[in-house]
Image 1 (cartoon, rainbow, N blue to C red):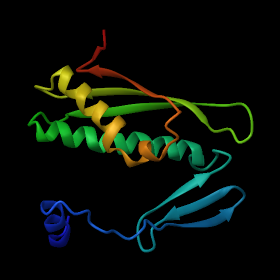
Image 2: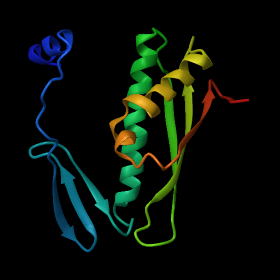
Image 3: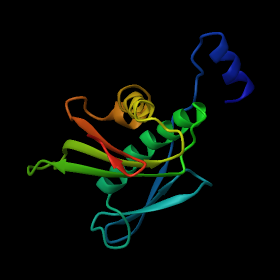
Image 4: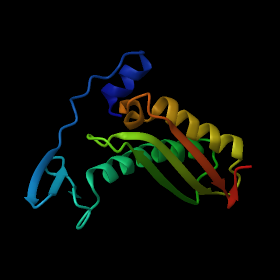
Length: 155
């Protein structure tokens, strides 16, 4: 957050940010390259041959968005993550458009001193409050999750 953003935050004002802007360029068949101008890019392949499909990328964006929050929250508690992964499973309807009907996230986190209650709270805060990708998803689509902490599955 820049000086202007930090000042706006302290004063209780929302920082005005420009819209996110990405370019999507066709690379042939069902493959597209996407990214911010001058920034890193990623490939998406509607056939899932040379790159993840757009839906897989969306699920990855959801998992990544939530993961950033969880890692940051645990670090602020002075219980940093040693390893972290999340499997994101999206069930889709059979009709067109084949939109998501349910998402399940399976977290695997390790880290000395991380207590289950704090890891669960970090995940819950991200899923229900902080993750902008989740907030952009239809609220009728359930997003559920499981946690394996230090190799111990939830009881």
